Amino acid sequence: MAKITVEVAYATPEKQKILAFEVEEGTTVFQGAEQSGIVNEFPEIDLAEAKMGIFGKGVRNPQEEVLREHDRVEIYRPLIIDPKVARANRAAKAAEKAKAEKG
Picture 1: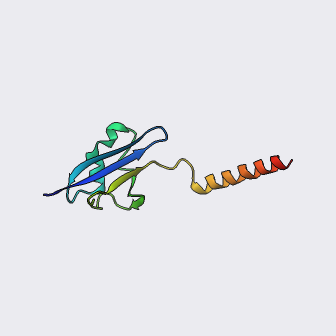
Picture 2: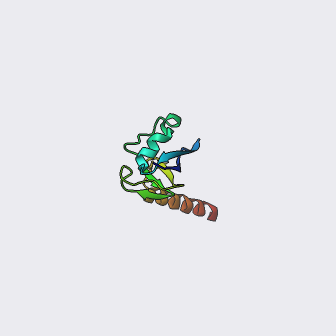
Picture 3: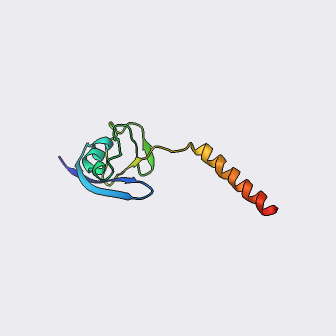
């Protein structure tokens, strides 16, 4: 069976890693993440629960989606805060700053 080249990427605020390697054609996103050894670099990753994507586009079922030549699997960290709440917090902080500057 033919081999294809893929990458697996993961990042924390302190450290980023992209691993390039070859897998057999027909390898799934999940299998590629497993085969990459990324959990050796980041033991906190739970591949069974982690959200994954390919080039920024989420993959609904990593155990079924098949990798293609030059795909980059991205493993996403869980959100710490809901994006809507974070946006509201930033807006409130900006309003406070504007109010303080006015006087």
